[in-house]
Image (cartoon, rainbow, N blue to C red; front, side):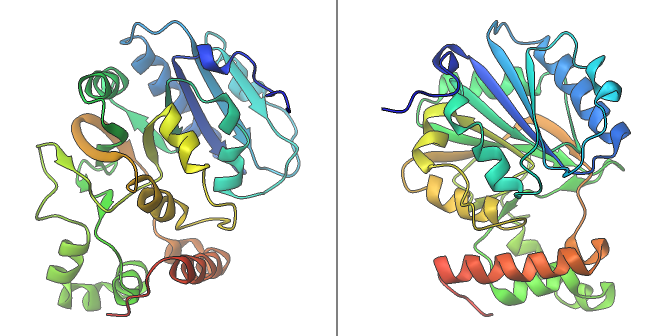
Length: 274
């Protein structure tokens, strides 16, 4: 039997994994500061933060250490750019009773963690929770999705604004705008990877993220696999601000990764064209 690298993992009440790659320091610091504030509203004593840095060449973490000084944390690096999913899986053996997969561009409400834990405690069948999200300008962001067709993905990610307007009703339906609001909604088919609050044993039962995805669609895949044995809930009292943007605005490398991951996804799950 191989010993875990984290023999104390079973005593953690909450673990948080944040994957970074060539990070914008100001954005990451805002995320860490909001996490610190949110932790002040929970009574947990055994909390561990894992910062997993996929940047190939590391110079210094001086910019980060002061902000994280009052947290129990570990910085993991040296693995290079192995992708979002594989980076998260590095700490799969360390997850606590609850485990948060958190993007480095998310600021959470000060009561977000307390409300997430309270919901999980009240609903023992819930294995994965997704929050209510907003853009930095205050407009609502829709993290829940219906199962995608290829046309949905192309329209949402790459179509010009004028073309999108012709398909407004279709895209709104894909983003579940007819269902997602100010009430709890159970079992959305797909949720975003920017803030995934797992029950720890559920995350471990999934086997973690599929390592074939370097970027994009790993959250689609783990959502569908989690739903096979656990309930997923959208919980609007868990509130975040997410800065995320679409692949088309990030350049050709991101577009290629989006296409590659879409091929992996539709080779694993049913292909729906339109």
